[in-house]
Structures are given as structure tokens and as C-alpha cells.
Image (cartoon, rainbow, N blue to C red):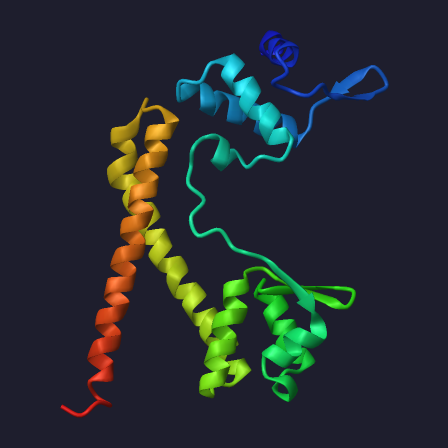
Length: 210
């Protein structure tokens, strides 16, 4: 193991340990890096290729992007003055408690006099719902319910991937695994939207004249 670690360090794959006197100290980051190297090797990457991947990753490039994994519906953060956020989200209907709830849900954070939305789509959809007459507190309530429900849906597709697809992909190059994940994600979105459309249509019939 010691020889392997030294070889990885010589090939720029692993950072040197910190020193406590004459003792070399490896921390959790070294363990995580060793596991990542082992995983990439199992998926067919050479040490030279892994070195290039890790160097780019250390410069800030997302590992998913480097490996060809698709960034599914990446959030689009939005920075705006807190005063503008209050105005767009109902003005006097917004209070510190609602902002605290939004922060706890990971939807917004405050920096000085600015608010940073984790995803501008939440602001745009929330704003549209409020224009229809939905109270800001209700928008937050529904977000929390939907986030939990979608987490359950996502978990089911993860289980499907692990139980039925992953066993057939052993030894498959990572880009091909990424393509399968990409396709599964597309189908998961499609079937979720289809199921929602069906459920909404059935329930809407109660309010619409025949």
C-alpha cells in the first residue's frame, strides 16, 4: 500500500501528507481520493488519464462534466437586492419568518443587502403563483411537499437503476454508463410529467362543465 501511495504521489494523483514532526499524516481527503482513483481504474481509465481528470477537477471543473455525465437541469442562481426580492414576492405579505423558512429550505441565502436565490426558477414560478392569488406561505408549503414527493420519485428510479441496470453495466466504460443514466433521467422526467398531467386532468374535470 505504501508503494502504491508513493507511486500515486509521483504521478500527481495524490497530494502529499501533512507533517506532524517527522510523522506523515493522511486525512479523509486522501482516503476519498484513493477511492476515486480505484473506481476510475475499475472503469477502464489509465493512471495518466486519471491524472488529467483530477488535475482539471482540482482547478474547479465538475467531475460529472469531465466524465461526460450530463448536468441535469442545473440550477440557475440569481442575485438581487433584498428589497427587490420582497417586492417581487408580495411586498407586505413577506415577513422575516417566511424568509427564514425559505433559507431553511435552501431556496435563498442573504449576503449583506443582497439575496441569492439558489435557482431563479423558484422565484419566477413563485412570483407567477402569487399573481394568481396564492399566498407566499402557501407557495413555501407546497414546495416542501413537492420536494419530499420528488425525492421519493427520484429514490425509486435510483433503486431501479441499481437493481436492474447497474448489474448489466459491470466493466462498462464510464461514458457509456453516463449515457444510460442520461437516458434514464430523461425517461424519469417524461413519465413524471405524464403522470402529473393525467392526475391534473382527472381532477380538473370536477371543476369544468361537461
